[in-house]
Image 1 (tube, rainbow, N blue to C red):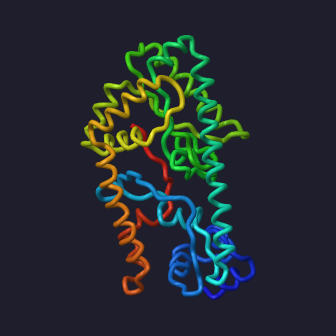
Image 2: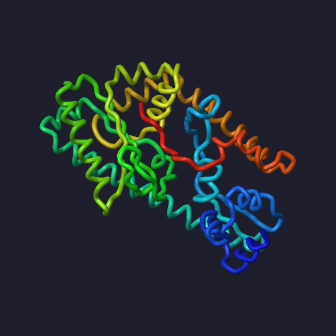
Length: 300
């Protein structure tokens, strides 16, 4: 791993992904070395936030995963180069913010175009609310290429998680709206100028409230997504009603408790993997917290 120091001396601060490409090391050894070396300083852009994962005990983990955070959001440099490390982190943070803003603008444009193309656009605007959740809301969107699950086509990083809640909207109107979003979804996927993925769901207010029961994995995911949603289009009255329901069911308190547990588990996992006495092979104990995976989130 001596070459890591030489690379940083020559190239200056690098992201984890850039450093990995330069040194051609295995990722676990590189991550451990950068975290344990007395000569290296690391600084992380962005933030961590709660994500639900079926493969994690208790379902709660932090996103990005340890490895995704290292590759995409971490700047590595020498300890005598702290100013340049900070400058690089600031540049990276600005880039992440710009990507998030760009995806949010796209989501607004797409939803507005779809809604305004409907025959019953006024009724849709009055009896439904369109919201966005996911990476974009946390200003943590990225453009790392990844395959879209249903087609295998490569897309540009974070998807657009769109949640539509309706209240007393006729089923025929909902069906036409669903068809329009579905068609737009695949036009964005196929268009090389975009290569963006829309992940969406339409459900009525009654179903949304039932899911606030928080009694299953699916209901937990639905509650969390609804809590983090940001308004895009439609009824502000309905949006405020949803926020009131979230308060009534104490969703914020439940999510905060689970996030605290996920933070503690994350620190425990990092300490365990960095402990030489445990042996690198024992990473399997925390593999679902460490290794990069498709950090997509099912919508229910």
